[in-house]
Length: 399
Ligand SMILES: *Cc1c(COP(=O)(O)O)cnc(C)c1O
Image 1 (tube, rainbow, N blue to C red):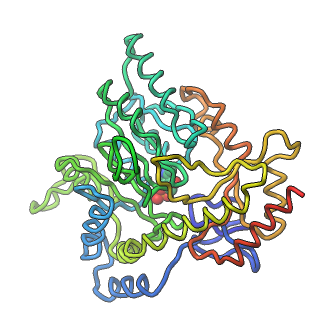
Image 2: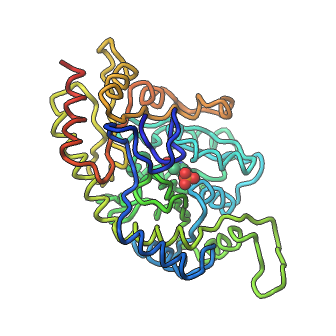
Image 3: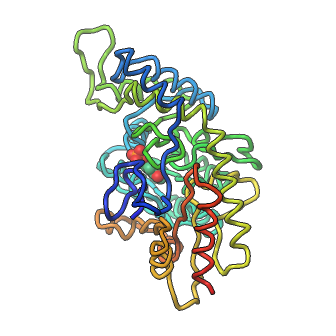
């Protein structure tokens, strides 16, 4: 069994960041070095261990600078960041919120926390993200039928791959719907052409949310971030994540708040990871290029490479051929049997018990990604020798 770090772990449990059994090449494990040790120790020794402290403010300041947003508010988890983001955009009980159907469940659970109803829209084959044509169709259909529009459209950039943001933003702007970006998996990914050229994922919608769970490209153990350019939303995000406590007045809380802030110890870890982010992104690119070259002659569908979208390949994922007679499960068993910590892609949300009754637009593409897709080891510290072992294991399935 592989160590996968926290919320995505399946089967036999390992602590986030733990290595798999001897000889197994892990799917994704954190890259923790001297800098991380130094900052965490500094946080511990300073006495600022909780959610007030210099590392929290410094991590927020540097994060905002790195992704190019005006404000950044550190949260306890990525899921908490999305929850607060939805509240900031006015989501209430019985509202509709559009969400990508093909994503990790952490994208959609916060919609349920608000008592709102997810409307699931299928992925497209080009980026594996929400299909712009289906979204446009759904919003235009509602407008023509005089139905209420969703309160928010949540766009997820899955597996480190930016969504095709131009047409998505056009449609949402045309119908006056605010966009929340779930950039939990896409820290470091950017658009390089089109209307958002030079922008970082998470900074195009009114609110962007990131995760620093154990298996994400940068980790704080557990943590998340809200980014926005809006001063009022940022102030309200700080307020809601700190129990809605009114400053400078004795224990006055003016609404129901949340205990959702990041701790100073975790922020120390995060700041060190942020300083090394370029190194991590470069490693992900190098690993993806080596896999691409090694698999070019195999009947596998390789991860999307789209002009104008600079992905990070957070989890390098491939699709097995449709016609082979053998499927994803045989491929996965073959790889796991050879000590390769591969893992299936997500079961789409429309197939998850809590969301079976959610309205669904399309669905076949997400079904296909789940039926045929798996991720290969791509920890930033993966050695060429270990990657060659993975490559040999993959190739041996096709001889
Ligand atoms: C990891 C993840 C989340 C949730 O983040 P946590 O920090 O684990 O709460 C949300 N959405 C996506 C797409 C994720 O991958």
